[in-house]
Structure formats: structure tokens, C-alpha cells
Amino acid sequence: MRRRFLMCPPEHFAVEYAINPWMDPAAGADRALAIRQWEGLKSAYESLGHEVNLIEPIEGLPDMVFAANGALVAGGRVYGARFAFPQRAEEAPAYRRWFAERGYPVHEPEHVNEGEGDFLVLDEVILAGTGFRTRTEAHLEAQEFLGRPVVSLRLVDPRYYHLDTALFPLDGRNVAYYPEAFSEGSREVLRRLFPDAVLATAADAAVLGLNAVSDGTHVVINIEASDLQLELKRRGYEVVPVDLSELRKAGGGPKCCTLEIRGDN
Image (cartoon, rainbow, N blue to C red; front, side, top):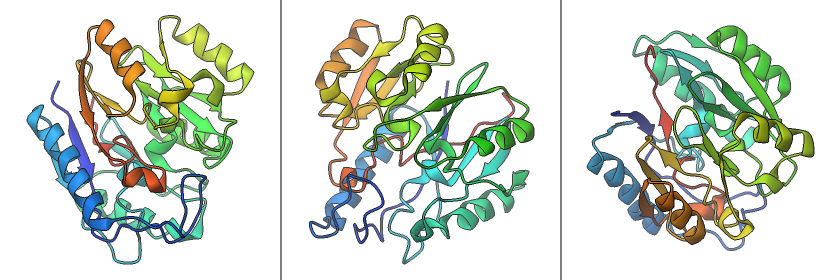
């Protein structure tokens, strides 16, 4: 199925502060390389037949490239973000405006949440992460606004501070994930919900291999996640490797750069 994505060019990308373990302001980042890598990701989506929409980047918001954090879109309705750190706070209204100007119903949230960073949509449920950024109150708020059941999962490893760094939907019914990123209770929930899930290794998680995007047939994934790619191929998926190593210096990968715009389905 053709997907519709919202992305933000990394014209102002930099590592100027540290709000997750991946970020080292002293090491910085190569913006020109980040732009080339991001353009490679955009081209990969377009080559698969997906539509890519763009939001204008804003100077002074170096992490705005991570569009997934800007909102959660399901059934043509937009649950907006409210960022945990002040450095990213102004991204939230920018993304809300983009959707409002195009006629989407937009909910300005009361509770801290970081959009699709911590909300991942499947056919019957929305999986929602908590532990580092998004509050559990936001899980309930999103459920009320979207009218879809939300399942809370607790993250316990600060390297995997968003749900989309530790899990991604393979399709509407199954997922891939790294068990050690989750609390024991959340691991049991995942085992019950997804007995046939793909389990990632520590090595693949450590290169943000789970920050991937699947359209149900193709999986766009960080090139370094070699074991996970082999397992996905064994399961019948077509793997599309991309190099986002420069953006990973801020804790992001393919999914972080990609907000899916879901219609009425």
C-alpha cells in the first residue's frame, strides 16, 4: 500500500545540546553529510512509490528533522506533540500548524508526549512507550481523542528513550523489537501480543536498527543492522538499507525522520 510521509529537511541540523545518550555536542555533526543522507532516505521512499510531503525547517530547531516526534496521525486526526525538553518545544506548534492549515482536526495535548517517537500504530491497537519522554497520561489522552485502544509499554534503557528506537511494526499485525529495552512486564505483554515477533540482537539495537520503517513488504532500515536484515529477508521482507550515521549522532534513524500521515483507515 502506498504510504504518505511528512519529512523535514535537516537544513539546520546540529548537535548543540545533549538530551539523550547519543548526543555529544563536543563531537558535533557534519550538516552537509546529514543532508545527503537524509536525501537518500527520501529518495528510497519515493523509489518505493510512497509520497513524501515536506515541512519547512525552522532555524534554531536542529532536531526538527526528526519529524516522527511532531505528531501522531491516525484516521485522519492529529494528536499533537508536547516535548519533554525546552530545546524542542517550538517544534510542536510548527507541526500542528502544518496539519491545521491542511484541514486536519488537530488536538493540542495537555500531557507530555513526543508523537510517533512513542506511539506506533497497528491495525487494532496503538503501542505507546513511556519511561523517559512520553507520560502515561498522554496514552489515555490519545486514546480518548483517536478512539483507538492504546497499550502502554515501559522503556528501561536510556539509549532507547523512545519506543521507535526499540520496536517497529512489520505490518498491521506484527512487530520487531529488542526485548532488553523493555521492563519485564512490558516484555510479557509483547510476548502475548506478538508471539511471532522478530527479536533484534543487542548489536542491531545499538545501531538503531529498530528505528526502521516498513510498508508491509519493504523495510527501510539502517545499513549497519546486519543480523536484523538477514532475519527480515528470511521472513520474506525486502530490505532497503540506508546510511543515516550522521543523524544517529543525535539519536535518530529512518523512522525518526518520518511521520506517517494516515487517512481514514
